[in-house]
Image: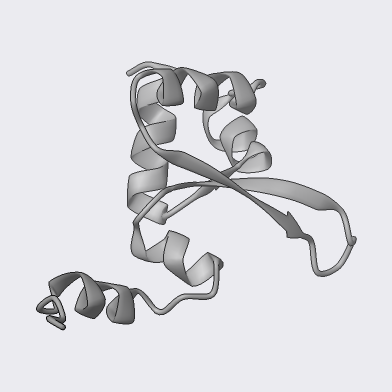
Amino acid sequence: MTQNEKILNHIRMRGSISQREAYLDYGVSSLTRRIADLRDEGYDIKTLRKKHPTTGQVYARYFIRGTPEYFLEIGLNPEFISQVAEAEPLHA
């Protein structure tokens, strides 16, 4: 399995990935390069900046756009998004 496949699988299974997780879990030293590769392959991966609660250090987490984890991170309820997507359109 390639590093790109490992990262994509991680995001799908756990919702997101950080540089630290990529390095410790898979030995990936350049997550930004792997994310760029996945984007080039057509995956809609979004970067959200987070602040570590203890150290205050800012870091990036990568999500696949449209997943429940992504909606939670940006402050939207994924169930609400699902309901809106399934709702009948309003007619004037």
